Image (cartoon, rainbow, N blue to C red):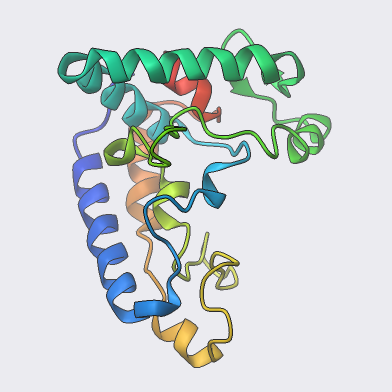
Length: 197
């Protein structure tokens, strides 16, 4: 599966929105290099995120094969540990979409560090290619049209609601949906599987 050409625009929009949200938030935004709370626990990623991660792994393998190999080793270890309980197809990495699978996913890998997280530096080794969930975590965002505004529990502690609202990071959901349709895939997976494809 190829990464749609428009993904570069999506990433650029998100990077600019994130930088502006951080500027607006100032010290209310606790996100800093080495803060890894959001890097623990399994979460679903869509096919666009998976394609971006695969593209990133290919680029990383060409530029820094040692780091790429270390990531793959962590991803394999992650799957060795958590794969037997994967609520979906462990061969393809596709998450199941039945009610039972969704319920099982709620408790799946909750405390597991992301295989992209470098345990020595506390930084993401695929930061440039990270999924949208990672890009929107921290500043106040809405995960979908009409959703409530949410932010990391470590951020905006004691801030007035008006301050939180003023720092909202807009998310281009329509562009992401359009690009996801271009992948031709509708299923979801987790980061470990995407890093190994």
